[in-house]
Image 1 (cartoon, rainbow, N blue to C red):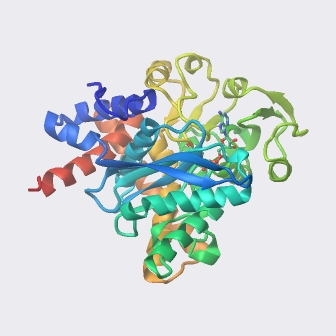
Image 2 (cartoon, rainbow, N blue to C red; image 1 turned 180 degrees about the vertical axis):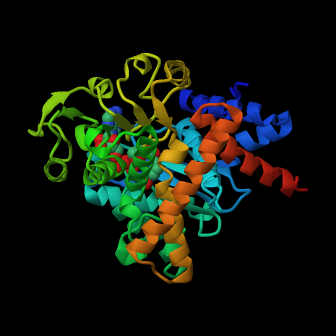
Length: 422
Ligand code: NAD
């Protein structure tokens, strides 16, 4: 059932709602519980005046959507991107609810966004904007209410400024308010690698199920940021060949394998892959249709569409990004049946799992080794994979719907058991 009379209405929000409906149909959820579980609980829209280096004041718009608060404090990243919309943030918040619940974290789901092109800001302007956003959302978040984290366009440094702003407001050091921080400020060992490492873990596990060994595996990745680059490194270390990478400027293909260290050094110096000499330049569209064993979208939503789903030439589609596949593309992929899909809520869950570990370490003031972090992470990923595969068999549905059935049913059950107040 379309949810159109809402301020969140947008193609990506509708995409998340349509995915929800497929799972809710399988669960036979009644209309009341269905609406209550689907709709975001609340949102805040903030307007942020920031003094630019020129002395001029610019006003930026930001959002925080808390989709679910029934199963614990909300949790979800903050995106800085010039095309961010409230509807997109709401869809991302919804996916966080299902993801946390699917992997068994005691969290709800949330997401934040600021409409800004960070490439147009100086470091000082970025700091002032990050601090202002945190100041504006401070009344709505906290270690027991809602715990943000990094997403597209934000990183450890941004988390550090935000944690500092919140702590200054509270009058004491309070690292548990945000995750993805630098190690020196209560960050967790392994958090930077966690999402990409988790994506690589699922890729390896599903390739093993398919009987495809590392030396016969080629990998193409869209988006060479935190998630894409860490997944690339982990799969290369396992023995696979990464033959294609890309960012917002376009892609690079090299059938003999891309020198990832050289690519990372190039991006650190030039801020993008444009002009990287280690392969032949291609467009992002061409990159997605490249023949490979594993295709990993690790950038933005809605890049696998009805236009290219029929043309993909991969065996495994591993969703590092949130929402990369439209509903129409899902239907085409289901008809093709030659591509295994690892859905976003499962595939990129390593990030929020290690964010949870970071929060636990902050609350306890007791810090773990990287070995302990990864050992606990892999065990949670294995449990989630087994439960999704079992649910898929039980309901004879797509792997995405199976993952959502698990995530949604746990949230819905918690809401039903809590009852209505008053
Ligand atoms: P990031 O900002 O570190 O990297 C994003 C990358 O995508 C950059 O290389 C950027 O140039 C590229 N990109 C942007 N627009 C593009 C376009 N139109 N075409 C091709 N490439 C483009 O962000 P990230 O943290 O790596 O997040 C990537 C995805 O993973 C997002 O969907 C995010 O929601 C999801 N995710 C991130 C985390 C995390 O821990 N960071 C966790 C779970 C899911």
